[in-house]
Image (cartoon, rainbow, N blue to C red; front, side, top):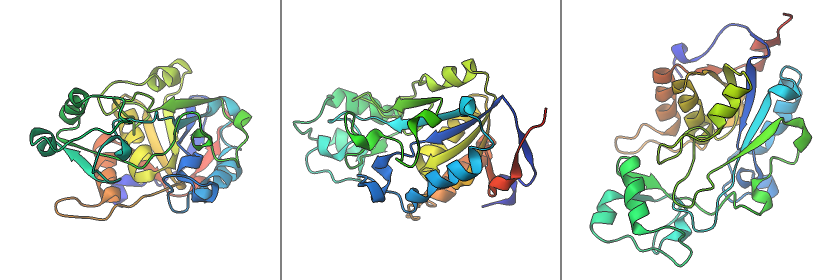
Length: 260
């Protein structure tokens, strides 16, 4: 991590600041039987309660959760002969290799539209965060009443929303207008995972005009390793942080309650 990415000073938290917890849900926590677990994810909730709840009152806490339908376009089980974590590519589409399973709730036309929006490829995932299951619930360490609201994302079978703000088809979610309507100008992100949904949400929020910080202690990474021309998922998202002006806070003690 470059020095230009890390915020070094103190920040005083006031009413225009929001603690935004991205997808700290059962789907990503092995301890609770998550379908797509992230290493160390079970440690996040207690950290947030102990270190961040005393700084951010209830009115300044917002969470998100994946809420996916069966047969979604980014689910591996929606395709025949495609494994989780593989990519659907434009070459596969043009050569006729893409075959849809009976679960698919979309058409090949929808696949083509998503490939255009994602510049030629998108990753497919194991089933996780399925609507109507406990996989969409926040970490049980939390009391649901400890959050002002929980915003569902990724509900369109023809699209997905790794970012809480902009979908893969580049559509704005309602979260942007909700947070603006509540008067928030600075966002402090935690959750899962640092190098996917948290990071992408941070970048999009910054591009949409928020001042954005990621609290590193309140996240965990998938940490996809480098390959070919890919620098690795952490390096890739941190390069985007630098471009968008997102700052990383490495020590939550840098945050203090404003006396004003």
